[in-house]
Structure formats: structure tokens, C-alpha cells
Length: 437
Image 1 (tube, rainbow, N blue to C red):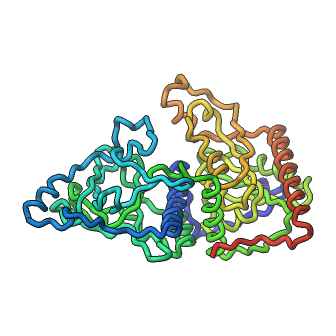
Image 2 (tube, rainbow, N blue to C red):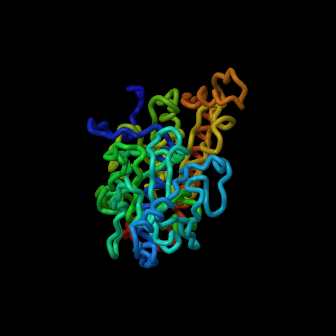
């Protein structure tokens, strides 16, 4: 910011701050993973789910030859079935395509092993190809007749009443993803009391050696199938747990105050003129009583600093990027304003709407997107994949007139909503609280 201009309230830099990944789809995967872990707990509590081995004659083979026949009957299939890669089907997908999900109304479709539907068999995986999921495999095997060189792992461990996943594996397009980060670990620890171990199968040197799990839960549709009511409950729970974990004060401000936060980026998809953009929103915020502008940079905040910042935010203003995943840490019905470089609308595909979807899932109000109309044109036709590389990391220019008008509209909307909420409380104390015990 220009030293001659007044500086809005900002979060100071910290040398021990975490780095926020730039890949927005990966961060959405992390967020979805956290929600699915919460859903595992819900499934256990709501149905008192108990894993039981099915009593079958085949589980207690009467002879060595019978056991060998059962072992030989294990058939490994590709985790990624290329026949259905672009044709998601009802009940199952290209991932483990031969398996059907259990789907209860309002809950996430899932599979668990062993179970009655698997006839008591365990889930086994083989292969660790990091480039093509069709070269990694899965199979079902009887507990007493596992493949001869298989490694038996504990998988997900459940306690009787409050199950906590001890091991977690993430597969993206059938490829093993063993990355873990402070953001996911912190929020998972806040939700479950401890961070899970991300299973990367590093101790298994032979890629052809199968790994079988004593107990496993598979969810392959992210949040699809979960009712809106259930999604909101899960996001509320994680948000509350994160605030308690980070010791964020729940009595922070009066209900009429409006927190407007500019969550900035540096480098790819950042504003070309940060000072000018800050000035525009600072000017409009100063016109509204109780509005305060906070400016922060996504790579300069620890996870708990992010939680605190979002708890004080009613209007989140930010370029398209992974930092927008933090929106669900705001109070419900908070507003989001999103910005894109030139070219994204035509070449980015449906992935550009991920934060619009996240806003809907978590109970936020996506107030639209501004797409930079100016800048260089891609030298190729828009149907050429090279155009996305050309536009992907572009800088975002500003338009003072349009930004100011958009800010006024959103501020007025938030102010009206807060006034209505205050009137409905009929003088009750303006305290922010949550009960996620």
C-alpha cells in the first residue's frame, strides 16, 4: 500500500506462517475430505454401526485346497475404469466401478468393508502409480484367504461410541495422494481431537504387493447425495470446533458491525494494483457505520489466524483461489465476492464454479463474480487447451466504478440483513456462540 495513504487494519506477518497451496481443486478435495470424515462419525452414531464378519462356511475353510481356491478367486480390477471416466453413473462411478454404494436418504453414498454387501470380504488395493489410476487395482478377498503376499492393515479404527478415523487415504483419479498440510491437519484435529495418519503405503517396497484392510469405509462422491440440512450441520460443527480449538472469542463484536475482509493473493491471480483495490473498498466501507476493513494475505496467516479472521468477517472479497476455501469458517449467511482474470469464463470449464458451490453447501451468500474483461488475447482458439495455460495465472485489473457500485450493493444487503436479525432478537444480547460439544 502507498505509505501516504491511510492503512486499513491488517494482520501482521509472522515468520512461522504456513503456506497456502495454490491448487484450488486440491484444497476443495481437502475440505471435502474433512467433511466426509465427519460424515463417517455421523453414520456410526446414527445407526450404531458395528462391523461384523459374516459367518459363512467359506470363512473357515475345511481344507488347504479350499483356501487356495478362494485365494485364487480374488480378481483385481482397475481402480479407474476408463470406460466410464466421462460417464458418472447412478449408484457407482468409474472409481471401483463394479461396486455399488449404500445410500440412505440425506447421507453420503458409501461402502464399508467387511459388511453384508461384501459378503464378509475385505477391501484390498494394489499398485501405487502416481500418474494413471487405471494402473492401480482393487479386489475383495476373504479374511482367511488373502492373497499370499498381501499386507493386512488396520485401516480405519472405530471406538464404540465416538469413532475417530486413525488412518486416512486420499485417491485422486485413482492415484495415491499422500500430501498432507497444516490446514487439513489442524481442522481435522480440531474436529476429532487428533490429526489422522495419511496412509501412503511407503513401507511397502513392492508395488505389486496387495494391501488389505481389516476395516474400511469408501466414499467416492464427495458431498453428492448429502442433504442440504445435513451439509449445513456438518459445516456448522466443523466451524464451531475450529473456533474452540483456536480459542477464538465468541463475544467479539456487536451484531450491527460489518467486517469486510480483503483476502489478497500474491503472484498468480492476484490484483495488478493492490493499493487501488484496497482504496476502493476502504472508501465504500467508511461510508457505512460500523464497517471495518481488514486486509490480509493468504500466505501470511497460520491456520488459527485464518479461523480468527473469518470469524470476524461478514463480507469476504478475494480473487479465485484456494484461500476461498476458508469461507465456511465465517458465520452462516456471510457474503462472498469473487474475482477472476480475463479468459476464465470461456476456457476454465466447470471447475471455476467450485467456490460458488461451496458457498451454497456451507450456507454462505455468493454475491457474484467479477471477470476482468481487459488484457491480452490468447493466440490460439478458445477450444485449444493451451488457452487455459495462457489465462490461468493472469493478473486481475480493477474498475473503480464497477467495484465501488458492487461494494455498495453488498454492504447495503448485509446491513439490511443485520438490521432484520437484530430486530428479530427483540433486545437479546448480541453474543456469538456455538455449542459443538
